Every structure is written in structure tokens, then in C-alpha cells.
Length: 226
Image (cartoon, rainbow, N blue to C red; front, side, top):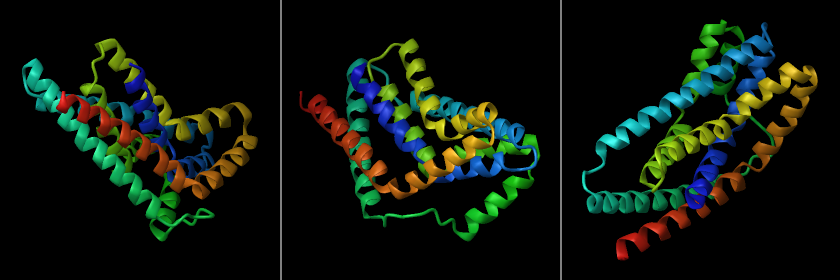
């Protein structure tokens, strides 16, 4: 349980470390309806993440073979593939230039401008759509596959999934809660955090991915060899 818990936390940390998600939340909080808009957006993100996790678990269960030996072998092969993909992902992240300040491109600016004008139901849908981004979607598929491959009970699997959702969506839900409680002061705190995340995005992505990839690869190789 401790091993899979560490994996889930590392996955969630990488998924959460997104200046774009935080930037979108700040834009929504600064829109016409302020806190209500932020709340609708956060609800959409959390519900969207839960739905993606549920679908990923369903697809993974349908793809696994029947039989304990075949199941263990398939699990080890899956873990090996995941581990190698994570290591490659970490190497790719390290090769990316380190940004010193957030510089949204024209597409991001257009998205932010649209967010300011959306109604509350539309903001909820926009939040759900945020969980379908390539990075977050890939990490969600990886974490659900890891939980499915681990020897944990149904209750433990649900607990791990909830933990992942909470941590992975923290940069959306936490600013909204802070804005509701502390008002405008929270916006300044979150903008400082956005600057910090952008500045250190490369190591924040590289180290968790690489450590997790090495651990998963070693574990898979031990199962396949023995």
C-alpha cells in the first residue's frame, strides 16, 4: 500500500503543477460573478476528474485478462511500459526551456478572454473540459492503471482515487476556497504561486516523473524475472 500511495501522490503532484490551471482559475475569479464563477469552475474540474477516473477504470478492467497468473503478467508488462514512458516523459520535461515568468501565447489569451464571459453552467463545463488536456488525461490514465495493477482492496482503490482527485485539482479548488474565505487577498497569494510554478515547472515535472518511472520499472522487472 505504501508503494502505490507514493506513486499516486507523485502522479497527482505532477498533474496539479499546472500554471495554466491556476491562471484559468484566477481569470474566472476575477470575472463578473467572481466567487460564484470560481465555484462553478471548480465543481466542473472536480467532477470532470472523477468522471475521467471512472471511465479509465472501466476501460482498464475490460482490457485485463482473466486468471491470476495472466493477470500478474499483464500487470507487470503494463507497469514496465508505464515506467519507461514516465522516464521518457521526465527526460522530455528536462529538455524544455525553463520559463522565468508566465508568458501566455495567443491561444491561451483567447481562452482566458472567453472564460471571463461564460455563464455559470458554461464555466462548469469548461472546468470539466480542463481535465481532458493531454497532460492531465495521460497522467489520469497512468494513475488508474497503477491502482488497478496494485494488490489493493476495493476500498483502498477508492481511497487512492479520491486522494488523487483532491491533490490533482488542488490548484483550482484551493484558490476558490481561499477567495471565498479571504477575498481579494487570496488573489495576490495565488499570483505569487503562479509565478513560482512557472519558474520551477521543469524540475517540478522532471523529478517526480523520473523517480516514479524508475520505481515502477524496477518493480515490474522484479515481477517478470521472478
